[in-house]
Length: 612
Image 1 (cartoon, rainbow, N blue to C red):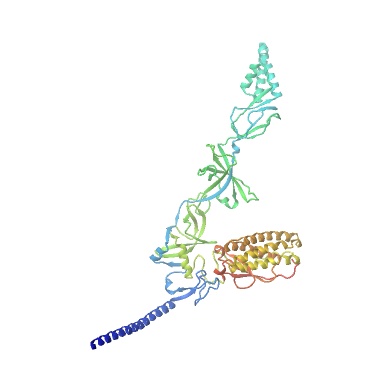
Image 2 (cartoon, rainbow, N blue to C red):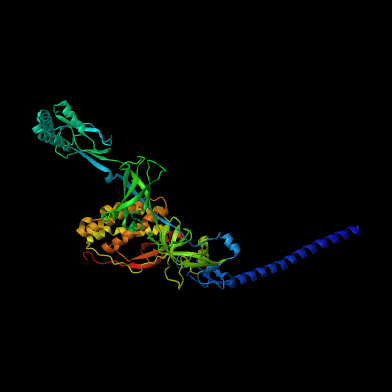
């Protein structure tokens, strides 16, 4: 019994010791972990160089916060991420980073390249292959043997029977001369022979064939009708004569054309004339023969520009020996122009153009940026001047040398990394951080363009001022991503347009207002029928332009409105809008980037009505 109690005591002491040990171990272990974590956190915090915006790298802040332009959270840039030896527009990547970013490069080289220009045209019969069959004498057409346009007429075919008193008389003279020749004695033989020859030649000059003249002599009696035969072959383009009518000498009977050679006419805009020259090849296709390519050659360029279409008519000759093509067919063509080293249609220069693939440049507005691999892992950004786009890529006019390596894949990721590090990039050209940012080489216009103010009556102003008010309500709704509210306001505004007193305007402002009102109605309808915010915002962009015109020219804003600009809207093309108070309320991004944009102009109300 004593022994059993002793064993129980040992077990209890052991358990207590184990629990105490675990608790102590946990306490000490936890303390060490906290120290390590705190130490690491402090180390990371000390490594932060500054805070920036991933979309606006020109922003540099000492502490974490929101971007003053777009309202996005700022991200840290670490000292360890900066390469000591890299320049303002340079980036050094490890071999692992290059693989992860799938960076690929190609050498810049010279080569043959062609610019392609797409054109649309119509086939026409070649005037060089056209001919007209005429009557060699006057008379009445009693019979036409070809009645259908498009029918093929062969040379020598009988085309008409004509009653001609002139021919009848000439035939009679021939018969009499022939009879005299037979009866005349030797002393008069020479005279009668000359008379016979003259009568025969007269009929020949009137268009009769030898066989017809021989038939007259054989029959020894003149017929009232004479047959007319085709002198040429061709398809009948037009029948110009009718049975029963009287025609004069030289009157046209049929218009013919051979279609083994055709013309193709197409219009080229004056801005594209640089790519069109005589002798250049044009490939044509037509819906009638899918996949078949017909080749032509440019033979004529109209010296005059059509003032209505601002285009020039160009003609190409095309072979149609197979007879597949028909006049008035529509065709699609491609003009191929060889490119010279200076980016123009080749003028005989022996130097070939410098070429880079289409994926190499990052193009933003007027700027084009490429990334050059100076050595393994070292990349440098460079602005280049590009020539025309060709079948082999872009022509480079300035900024690169033959043999240099340019990035063709992964270049956007390299540019993004530079943006995050607040270095020069496609979007950011460097220098001091501007108060408003520049995307795609697009600069905001800070000075408002002067608008012509028109003579407007108070009656008209009061009836139309609601447009600006409703527009401002739509702007607020879109800035809050409220599509249904924007649609309802747009529909209501559309109904109220009928009440605008246009009759209170004079002739000139009346015509101007009609143009603005039609555009406003079109865009309000678009917003009212939009199914997505993106669609509504697209119409709102156009509406903003028209409302601004209305405010400036017709003095419709009854209170001060503010013009704002967001350079990132619509794929960095940028867009303006008006709002009724200061402080960005972006209608193009809504809650995503509510504060993206900046004020560019203040539109104050213009008092009075009858003023110019």
